[in-house]
Amino acid sequence: MSAPTRSRTPAAPSPAATARRPRAACHVTAEGAAWLASADSHPRSALAHWRGRPTAPAVLPCGSAFDVVSVPAVFGRRMLDRLEEEGPGSGPVAAHRGRMLLFAAPGTASRLPSLLEWEEWGRAVPSVLCHGTGDAVTVPPLTTAAGAPAPEDTQDTRLDSRWLVAPATRHPWLPGPEVMLWACVRVARSMASSTVRVSIFPGADQDAKVYDVSRRR
Image 1 (cartoon, helix red, strand yellow):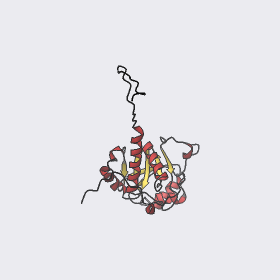
Image 2 (cartoon, helix red, strand yellow):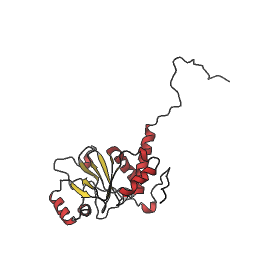
Image 3 (cartoon, one colour):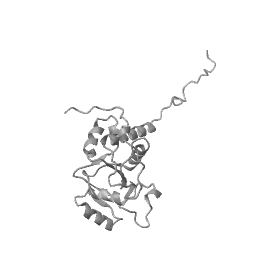
Image 4 (cartoon, rainbow, N blue to C red):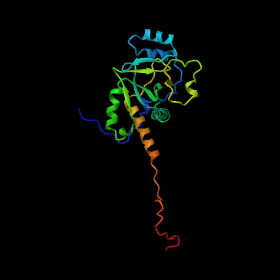
């Protein structure tokens, strides 16, 4: 099998394949809960148990209904902004213990690492963890516990587990590996460019002679 071609400038998602949709609410709907439960080998039992404890997080297997791409919280927030503002939108997204969990199409976990490896900006993407077949992730509760701040009322990504974009439909759209690569690279490039400070004026040398050249012909 030939090695994949390195892409210097990742192409934006195809308009035909990336119909934009409005951002989902921060609260899981009944259909969204059914979709999450479908990842379990016994979805009805999982859903009944979860509905009985709606303020408790759950552990769900990856690889069938979804894969999950986990990145540091700040980087993940910027990925979400890119996906929503410039790309096709996002799938469900959760914050969990200082990291962002971006739900992706099954198969993304096995494909994305190789895409990042061959992408020249891949090394600038921090600590990407891909969870697919054989892995499980902790997902936030269906609802917020009484007295706790609602997700939209706080920007503290250190909260243990909360939804940023909660599943709202039985069949949510999920980004694939190419879209996730696109978002990773866009954020990595923007973060790199924001740290570069180039000045056309060199630092002053206190021992250097200064000449007035304003009238020189």
